[in-house]
Length: 261
Image (cartoon, rainbow, N blue to C red; front, side):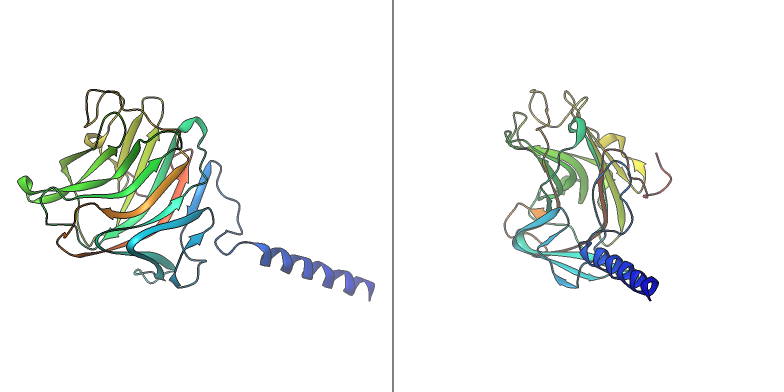
């Protein structure tokens, strides 16, 4: 009987430990160098305001956990009206050496076709003590080339408000893509990868960027936002639908986007 009581106590302790795991945590240890991960599978369906290591920020926008469009697990649906915004906010970051890698699978239902030069952001990094906003994933509608194009950008810092978009990196609506970015403080360098392939034309650095003649310098990063924001009023279309999944932030490249380099 003593053996049975001991076995029962062990089972109860194990059950309590499992229940203590936060709903968005994994029962497996995070890979070395991981700063944050989220795949939404452990969150309840419906509107979401926070998760493990993140909160939300929205205006004229909503964030909802929905069944995955691939039929497996769950994903995040972001919807905004007009020039609204809706972001996940990872605001507990302290990346070693002020450098980090990010990865997210995403699908944008439609990009703006008006007004001319409409500008949108998907990822934005910032830090206390500096006004500089670093936007490793974003882009712009260019009427001169009749399309939306990916571009790295910045705002509020000494280099001004700019988005260095390239026609060689078209933004395609309605398509799942795996996007990665590397913020490397060694040269204030931003590097972007789409579906595992480096987009070398989108790289910016201290001296090579899209702003003024001043140096482009990172803030001391402590926050990263992932979601959607459009800045111009009365855009066409009037609302935007974005899906996100498989988010990972780390001190080294997470990978999982393909075989490109």
